[in-house]
Structures are given as structure tokens and as C-alpha cells.
Amino acid sequence: MEGRNLRDFLEIPYDQLEEMNLQVKEARVNRVPFAQIQEERMRYLQDEKRIKAVTVCFTDLEGRLHMLDYDKKFLLKAYDNLTFDGSSIRGFTAQQESDLRLRIDWSAFYWLPADVFGPGKVLVFSEVLEKDGTPYSGDMRSKLRLYCDQLFAKEGIEVNAANEIEGFLFKGRDAERRYHEARSFDFISTGGYYHSLPGDDLRRFIDSAAEVQRAMGFANEKDHPEVAPSQFEMNYSYTQALVAADQVLLYKLLCRQVAQKMDMTASFLPKPVTGVNGNGMHTNLSLSRNGKNLFFDPQGEDQLSASGWDFIDRILNNANDLCLLFNASVNAYRRLDPHYEAPNQIKASAVNRGAMVRIPLGNERSARIEVRSVGPDANPYLALYGMIRTGIEGAPSGEDNETKRTRTRFLPDNINDAIRLFKASNWSAELLGEEVRNKYMELKQASADRCPRALGSMIKSAEIQYHHEVTNQYLWSMF
Image (cartoon, rainbow, N blue to C red; front, side, top):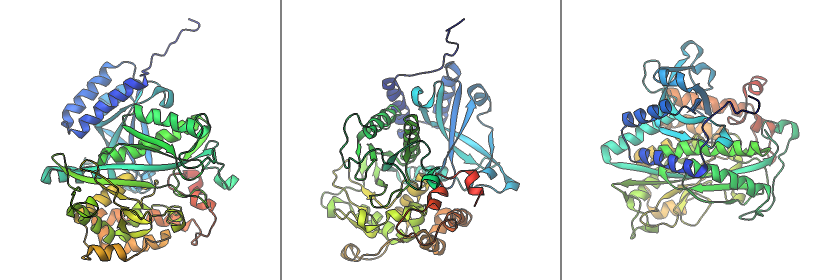
């Protein structure tokens, strides 16, 4: 018996993982019927004896990823009756009405690299339901899915998205949670834009994370060090909006996991260090119908169609209403600093990187708009839902293109002003409903109240300690 391996859990080579995950992604994009996918996934789990657990994911109102590991045999028996205590999740139900349900989205199924996430596990996303099985109002994933499904069913419109997510790599594990002790972050590298030696820590991290990303079916395009010291970005191809939002959460999860294994911290704070560029989550969007890009017009201004410009106009006209959705933390407003290519101008431009909307150079396949004012700590489902619905239904400005290009307005430069504008907005209430709008606003106000009102020039411990992606229950309760 000595030396015998008693565990035989699933471990799949990276090239095979990529092939399997891309097949699942293709089925999602092609809208294979849900019942068919559910049957296939459950049959697979039943037959694959080497899987021990299924990681079921959902997000709260602020976009934090929550994960529950279900024993595979239990899940197969109880998949239609998964409940959890919603009162323990910030921004969810009150204590007296705490029980909520999870509905597994079997189309959002991922095989995981065993060396990063452990052997014998697969991951699947879920949506949050009320007791009666209806979508929970605070679950932004279901809100985004339903809106995109309605667009496709009624008008044949598919929403395509891709996110460019920047992050920092710092020395040591849990560097964000320990910030109040050290009062600073330690860079891994000071090499700068596009530059790092093949074997240095930043490049090793990027290579390792990109391998995991590729294996999980992201369809990688390029990766590189970014402008600031120890900053990185790993780009991947556009896809359906809901898939893209799921990938934002997986991107941050895998980066954090790879960094931790290397005794480092991957941070997606918008501005963790003063004096250098911050982290953005530039969001590229286009609409298509029957495979035709509705935003492309070779004769249009900047080769963008009239419908593309109309989409931009509605976003710009409602920019202040959306700002709190795109910049969801106290720290996010440090990034909206014009000295560091900050996209804080409420205008659109093909060349001005200070504009909140950019029109990238494109062709019939790649024509799109790029909303640059989104922070990487935004709830991706909420940000995309707000962006898409506003671009289609939001009130237009009525201004001519020349006025929109020359007149410059600015986004709020602090969270308190953003909360005030959000509270006064009729559009924010229509987007989310009064109850969810107020819950979201209360969460943001609670973070703002724990931090100095004036940002000042130096990072304050509180804006990191009470950040929604960093804080833990213990620290929050000590306020």
C-alpha cells in the first residue's frame, strides 16, 4: 500500500482543455437550446467518475464573485433545488427573507487547469432566483442575459463585447488586505510598456496566466506589460456580451490564483499607486444582425454607421447617470485624472484618449465603439447592461456631431458627486428599478462614508481596506 496513489481525480492537458472549452463556448454563441446542453452536461458529470466537485459561481450586486463547491453526486440529485442564505451577501435580501435559489447555467461550463484550481473540479456559472423561481432583482447576470435574449428574439440583434482589463502585480500574497499595515505596494518590475525580460517575474506571471486563459477558451490575442511599473494586460477576442462578462470574472480569478501560487498579488484596483497610470477595463461593443456588423459604414464618419453614432450619443448624454456603475469605488475616481490618459471627458473621438468613448480603427468585421471610462472593479454584468440598454433606449442629446465633438464636459472626480448624480437620475431608476438602484447606492455610500471625503494626492488605507473587492467581513465590521 505504501506509495500507492489513492486519488484518481480529473487532470486534463492544456491543449485538450482549450479544445473542450472552445466547443462549449461555440455552443453558447450558437444558442444551442438550454435543455439539450443541460442534458449533455449532466450526462457527462454522471459518466466522468474522476470529478469530485462542481464549483458553482454567482455574483452579488457589486460584482464580487462567490463560489460554492458542491459534491458532484449531491449536485446531480439536487441541481434544481440549490438554496443559500442571501442575507449574508452584502446588497442582497434582508434577514427576514433570506432564502434565495441558484439556477445553474449549464451553457456557462468550464473545465479547469488542475495545476491552478486543483484536480477533479469543473466550474459553472449560475443565476440567483427568488423563492418562487423568478429572477432575483439584484442579480445583474440574469438582467443582462434577459435583455440580450429579448434583443435577439425581437430584432435579431446580437451584442458583441470584449474587455481590455489592466492589472498590477505586487510582491507578496494578500498585498491589498495588508495595505493598512505596509501603507504601500511593492512593484515586481519597473520595466515599463511592452518591456520585460523573458524570465523576469512579471513575464513569468503573464505567460502562466495567459496559458490558463487560453486553456479556458478565451481565444487569446496578445499579452504584454502595460505603461505603469508591474502593470499587465492580456487581450482576448470578442464574443457575446454575457460570455464576455463571465470572462471578466474568470480573468480576474485566474490572475489572482496564478499570482498567489507565485507568492504575489494580482490587483485590479483602479489606482493602487499614485504617480503612475491606473487600471482600466476598456469595453468594446458592437451590434450585429445575421452576421452583419451594424456599426460599420465605410462612408460614415470614422467609418462608423449612423446607428453607431446614435448609440454613442445616448451613452454620452447619460454619462453622468452611468458613472457610478462604471466607476464603482472611492479609488476609481483617482483614475479619472487627466494627467494619466484618463478618459474623463464626456465626448467621443477616434484619437483623443481623454475621451470616454473612442472609435477604434476597424473594418467590416471589427468596427466597434470603445467605452474607456470603465474601471476593472465594476460589476461587468451591471456595466454592460447599463451600457447596452442606454445605447439603445437612453435619451439622445439632440446635439449635432460638431457640437458633441467640440463641447467638453467632464465626469465626476469623486464618488460623492457620482452618488448624487446617480440618485437624482430618472434613467438610473428606470434601468435598475427603484429598489435595486437604492440598494446599490447605499452600498456605495457605505464605502464612501468609511473614507476621507477629499481624495488628496496620497492613497488612503480606507479606500483599499473597505474596497468591495478587497474587504472582508472582519475588517468591515471593525469600522
